[in-house]
Image 1 (spheres, rainbow, N blue to C red):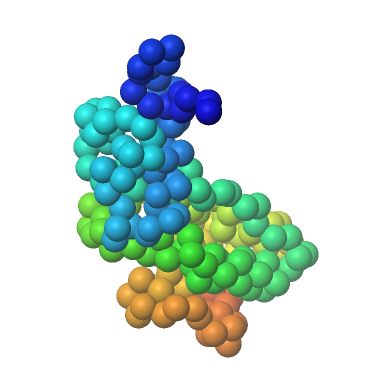
Image 2: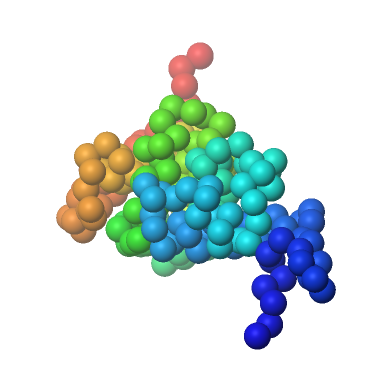
Length: 206
């Protein structure tokens, strides 16, 4: 039988240190988070999976929430925004992709972590799907293309405006607790809120 190189060193074994140990811990944390969900996620379980002790984990992540967020970020992958050739199609397809994500097991983990993070802005900023530069970038890409085509006002190119549709969708899951959002709601967000907002927006009065 081959010895597990991630465990504490014994005869003939090498202790993992630095980045190598951090990689082992993060991989174990991601596996544990996927298997058990955040509610059952513990430092003890991660330490057992990683073959290390809790002190090694606590030196890098002060509590299970910060480790859980780091593990979630490892699981989440960036997806390029759609390019259907017109604004409505782009926004609707992007919302549909987001809806599928929020409805998935990984989306359920995200909702658990958001709930656990509460109003802690530092932790919220670490979650990929939160408002911020990373979250706004694909929306600004979609809206920038629409401005170039003459479909939207240049004044709409602001992160708070660009991400409105995504925020409304997120609220359906986080605030209302919806397991998934019906497609007619997505269409309503696009047609009744987003498109009128970005098409009619003008400069602020001086």
